[in-house]
Image 1 (cartoon, helix red, strand yellow):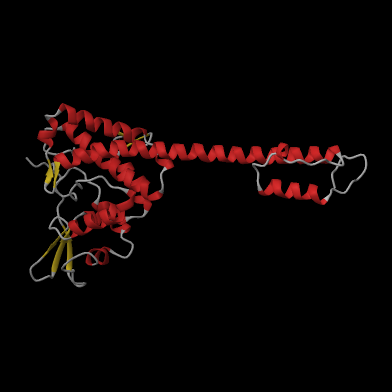
Image 2 (cartoon, rainbow, N blue to C red):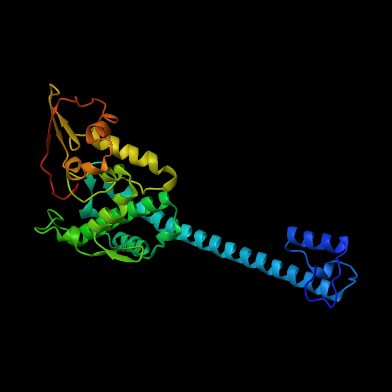
Length: 295
């Protein structure tokens, strides 16, 4: 029934069919429907209903288009600084360390790295998916480490007596002024991925080596596994005695043991070419904070 009529008139089958079709197709327009209404109020109600539905659909479509545009812009921004970051990593990073001296001599490449961290500072991380976010924050941490290490270079170590290099709010990531420690503890580690400890580099000898490519969401799992296996099978990660009775682990496994949910040894042995015996004596290596420089 159409409320508000001077008398109650039951709509015809044709009128009902128009209402149903207008709901199924929100882009239909009453101007395209050639019907003579027995009651002018019935036609007015139908026109209002159809117009309202069409406006709602168009509004939803507009919101979707704006969202897709924002995502594409964020992706384009990431790919632009990501390509430059990859170029710099490929040029100056080696399996044994970073060529800081050579990098410091290149004004163009110092400026290029500044452009990378400036883009990281402005990135909208909230628009990214979970894997994209993790890859972004890993790249953000490592790129800023390189930037700050180069700022201090020449130096024997980025670490100072009070660890202010890591605890002071000297970097900006995704609009937030933060520290390396806060970025690691309050953002990256909270994502629940223990392999991040082998992807982050602190510009020091005992750290896992810096990857020669940026982390990407599409291949992040393989990248993290490669870094974890590489470190665990190196002497920086695990020093196993000849008789296998003693294992000296990196301090990383002591500092962050709570992040390895099934236990440190299980995590290690899943990736070691020569597993550690369950009854082996476990000790921890001294951490070498010397700059991870190669000349």
